[in-house]
Structure formats: C-alpha cells, structure tokens
Image (cartoon, rainbow, N blue to C red; front, top):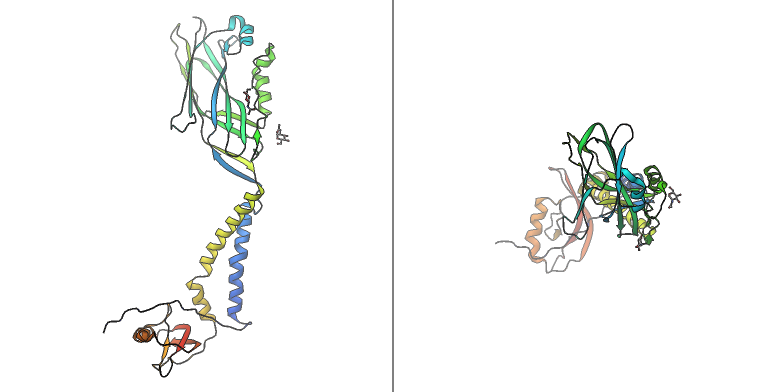
Length: 364
Ligand SMILES: *[C@@H]1O[C@H](CO)[C@@H](O)[C@H](O)[C@H]1NC(C)=O
Ligand SMILES: *[C@@H]1O[C@H](CO)[C@@H](O)[C@H](O)[C@H]1NC(C)=O
C-alpha cells in the first residue's frame, strides 16, 4: 500500500545542559562572536557615528558665455587677447583680436541636463605673429538640487604653453566640483552665486588672471577643469587663424555633506543589522547545532521498540525512525497524550538525534 503525507508540522528540538559545561561555554563564545564582533567590525569599518556622507548628482550646468582668452604671440611678452567684458576689451587697445567663436551645449542622454559644451574659437593673427601659449577662462552657472539647493557661478581655466608655436589647441575635459568643506544637507546655499569676474569694473585689476584665480581659489566650493591631455598641434599655415577647440563635459558628481542625525542612526543600524545577520547565518546554522549536539551531555536510551511509541522525525532522524513515522502517519488522527525529550543514538552510524517523542496512547 502506498504511503502519502497526511500532515506535517515542524518539530521543536531542545538541547539541555547544566551551567558549568562545555555547552554553556560554547554558547557564550557564540553569542560574543555573534553580537560583539559585528559591533567592532561596524565601528572599525566606517564608525558608528558617521560624520560625513556622500551622494551622487549630475549638476545643472550652463555656460554663461563669459570668456577671456589670452595668447602669447612672442617670447618677449607680446600677446593678443579677447574677452566678453567690454571694459577689458577697451583697455586691450591694439592687443584686442576679435575671434570667431562657436558654442554648443548638448544634452546627450535627453535627461533634461546638459552634458557637454563644445567651444570653438578661431583667433585671427598677423602674418608675423605666432602663438606660444594660450590661457582660456570660461564661466559657468552651476546648480545642485538633491539635498541642499546649491547655486553658484564658477569657472574653467585652461592654460597651455609650448616652446614651439602652435596652430591648434585641443582640450577635452570634465568640469569637476571641488569641495573644501561638506555642503549643507538642506536649505539654499548661494553664497558663491557671485560673478567670478566683475564685468562692471573699469579697473584692469578686476580682469587680471592672478587676482581672479586667487579670489576664486579662496572659495570653499569651486569647479575645476580636469583636462589631462591638451593636444598642441604645430605648423600653422601663414595667414590662417589659431584654433582653439574645447570640449567640456558636465559629469555626475559625488557630493559630500555632513551627516543628518536621523540618517546617521539608520545607516549605522543598517550596517550593524547586516553584519549581525551575516554572523547569525555563520554561527547559528545546522553546523553549530551539530557542534552543540556533540558537546551536550548525552543520555543513551534504547531505540523505542514499542510500536505504540512514535517519534516525529527531524532533519537528522535516521531512516528507521523515519520509516516508522511514515507507517504510523495514518494514525495521525489519534490524540497524542504525552511527550518527553529523548535522545536516540544509532550506534552503527554514530548519529545522534535529540527530539521530542510523542507517546502513543496504548488503546487509541
Ligand atoms: C544667482 O544670481 C543670479 C544673477 O547673478 C540671479 O539672477 C539669481 O536669482 C541668483 N540665484 C539665487 C538662488 O540666488
Ligand atoms: C570655508 O571653510 C572654512 C573651513 O574649512 C570655514 O572656516 C569658512 O567659514 C568657510 N567659508 C565660507 C564662506 O563658508
């Protein structure tokens, strides 16, 4: 006759031991490893009381169309220059050259935020002029919205020089955010929403690159053009303009901000929770119970031979017991009247099973 499973339910297995035993010692060690070790690991890894946090955001960047370009045309200090500041252009006099400029800003992934600025400039030169170095300054409006609203005006500055006169300079780089201090995590942060170059000033000092860069670098929040490899091309044909080709990307930024008290608690609790779960998984597993099983004092009780005794099989119940359970499962409808803890040992396999034996009523 075929057997089928009529009913099933989990079995609670109890391991009992007195206080001064190896089992107690083992339990204490496991508890320490489970809760104290993760505490130390969580503390050592990033600290329980994190002061800083970071987030990622792609800034909203717009080129402000403010430009200043200076090109050295001899090794004796002659130069030509051009800017978008009328006062400066007036002061430049005969050094002013009006270039052909083309600017394009692109949103390459259609996410509503611009990703790339292409800035091209062709600087007309006299027949006897050569270009030995180029300084280029561009200004941007830079905004972040995710935590605090950050609104600032920033710049990108490139400088390249060569002992060999050039025909073309190619620059490709990222406009990166530089934070000296963490940004606030809420509110409006617009203390740097001021012009990098004061275009209304009639004084030459306002346009002096040394002054501009000095006051810019005093700021705690700036952008910098990271352009590892400017490409300087030599061999300009007589009468042709000097070409400047610049590509500036506005990449995703990692922004530091001070830890918000509420987040802090949650994050370190999360870390702790993860590590505890891991260590629970490592220590409180079947293997651990096997170990406990092995160091628990054993009572050797002969296998129940009385067919009226039924043992509910746990994961380690050996086949004989299991078979017996199967054969008796059809009597499951009978009420079980008594239970006790029992350790059954299979001498041949050296397997021990501690389980709950439910005694069958003699006359169901
Ligand atoms: C930033 O400055 C610009 C002009 O300089 C102004 O139009 C804008 O409202 C300012 N934004 C904030 C948030 O202060
Ligand atoms: C810039 O950061 C320094 C600390 O590094 C701070 O003392 C100073 O107040 C900050 N300046 C501004 C304008 O926030």
